[in-house]
Image 1 (cartoon, helix red, strand yellow):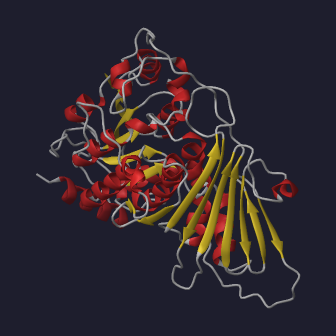
Image 2 (image 1 turned 180 degrees about the vertical axis):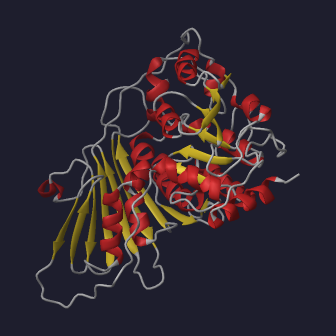
Image 3 (image 1 turned 180 degrees about the horizontal axis):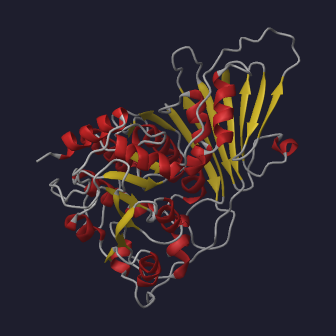
Length: 437
């Protein structure tokens, strides 16, 4: 009998050789033993379990629906019932821990609120599963690092849910930057016009019927139920989400990370203001300055994130509510999700434009992950690349929450060397009964 790794290597080689793999079941139990699944070829379907069946979770469920959906999990029975009506053969669960322990699948999709990403992902990785997880990967910097290390240890195929990465426009922008079209780049501005939905704290509250609220809270601090922090609105409370930066930072900062080969900032300094009604702690307006060191022959980069009503000076001329602006020695390059525009300077200086191999268009963000699970090939938004991006995004919130103090960041040891106040924000304490270790 094959173990997980030898079976997966057999499948990878079979795909490369163009052969079938008869009688090679893909599904595994939580202990790593084979479970008969009827999947006998890399051209056949993966068995996938999904945690979180609404909003982004539902979109991810549909994104992998070409495969066999064998298990569904959600703490809201109405969301679970809707998903089950579309995938009636799937087993239904309220508690993802029981679902992962029961096993019988190859891969796990996690589309829950941020505070409930890390535990199911790590449990899934421990069980030998491949993982697709929504951005910003986790709620804290420490959680992201644990997920990355587990993924590397288990040689799992992983993908973070930054779906726009698969778009053709981002590829064309990366090609222009890497070709040196606007020269060396030391300055980048990233802005997003999103705002905060006001919410309130309550002294008591009753969850809707059919909702397991204790499981929804999970490792976060328990608080009385209110709709203003539930379902989509969890994004605007530190207990559960990361505000506008946590929501959109991984999408927009993904472009400079990819184009400029960025990894870890050495300094992060955030400022912000509430700028909205309600009891939410997250800022409505925010600015974060990131300093990245030189990479090979590329110079250091100063990247600034803005959201809400705050934008870089002169942003009005571009007419974009959300965008990325690269400033190079010989021009500027403006991009958003679907468009880009080049502004080259008229200084008549010779341009050192390099020949760059075109980046192949994507088969689709979810499809990339599915294909890689079968071939054991790479993904574009694996946890190593996306984890470094997510850590940087989350550090902006750490700086803001640490009394808006700049952080001198030691990425190897996950510590702000000048700011001990940041430590409980880099790694927060879990509610009793919940652990990642």
